[in-house]
Length: 380
Ligand SMILES: *[C@@H]1O[C@H](CO)[C@@H](O)[C@H](O)[C@H]1NC(C)=O
Ligand SMILES: *[C@@H]1O[C@H](CO)[C@@H](O)[C@H](O)[C@H]1NC(C)=O
Ligand SMILES: *[C@@H]1O[C@H](CO)[C@@H](O)[C@H](O)[C@H]1NC(C)=O
Ligand SMILES: *[C@@H]1O[C@H](CO)[C@@H](O)[C@H](O)[C@H]1NC(C)=O
Image (cartoon, rainbow, N blue to C red; front, side, top):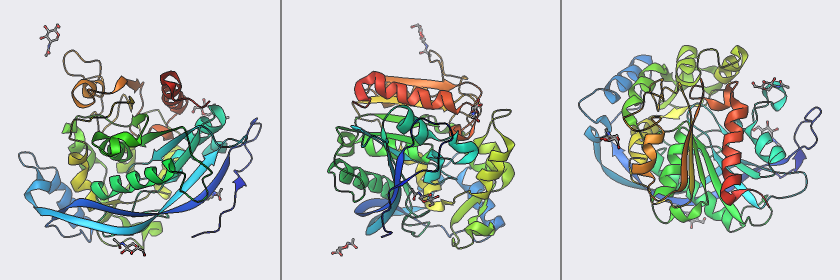
């Protein structure tokens, strides 16, 4: 494990407070029922394209078609994470932040433009929460794994569960003490994992409140994302050269299509997101749809925040809602989160899927943090 050095994050010019952050690694022992899929890891552009053409073909569920059965996966893994707390010391409430496809934990604390886009800066310096952002299994500083049989939604949800249990027990080295409340914020695939963890016992009891960003329960737009994101082998990008076959990354056009809405982003941020893009696993693509396709028993406050022009979860128009619903994300609430307290769906005007990268981020961040505060989950 890296030595732990508590260091003030780079000076926030003119800011009244500067959060204290530390990089840690958290060992977890986890077990999950993964899918056992009969599919080869794509080794080049053509094979990757063929995989997505199969995955998105209407009239069949490809993942079910190629599934031989279930496979128990167990292991000891290490999770790379960054814990931040206010200058004045640990908050009474911890937010656990889970990023989506294409990113790592830095999605929550972007240094771009003097940390102007940092969710963590808002949550910690602005509202007084503590935060813990982790790298999903398989990438960043977390343990690597087989991108077909191992790095799948069930194992990653188990990792989020084990991480949360340790945090609740005050058993994470580098994170001081216990918190009165632990809430979870996800983005995209990270929202799917958050939903999956809290949908059933015992995970439902591990969170006091959830905010699912870049999310809905309508799976009919996954094809638009999967075909539009321009996925090819991750190792074709120089900075991802050490990822083996089975790890995928987008081309620049695909990254924009999947994540960013017209007129809503600084072009330099697209360049940065592309240059620092993180890979996604074939096993994740095969399990993302089924992981959240269950009615949740979660009984705490639940918020969905999605950009009006989100591609993967709304097909580019969240306001094209089913009858009697105000938006596609809102339509998820009665059937899928029937026990949630004060469930709410908020649409970010004009925004695309990559909410933290867009000009609308102040609205997004205020929506999430205000929701926690107004539901009794604010820092004491
Ligand atoms: C944590 O690690 C990241 C790179 O992985 C680095 O940019 C950042 O400065 C580190 N933060 C601290 C507080 O050490
Ligand atoms: C995890 O590590 C412990 C202690 O080293 C070991 O006993 C156990 O067998 C390991 N578990 C797995 C699933 O590898
Ligand atoms: C919408 O609500 C109206 C009034 O309650 C009801 O008559 C109608 O059947 C509903 N439509 C659908 C598709 O549920
Ligand atoms: C921070 O971002 C917001 C929204 O993109 C923008 O309105 C504001 O001017 C930015 N502030 C600074 C200091 O760059």
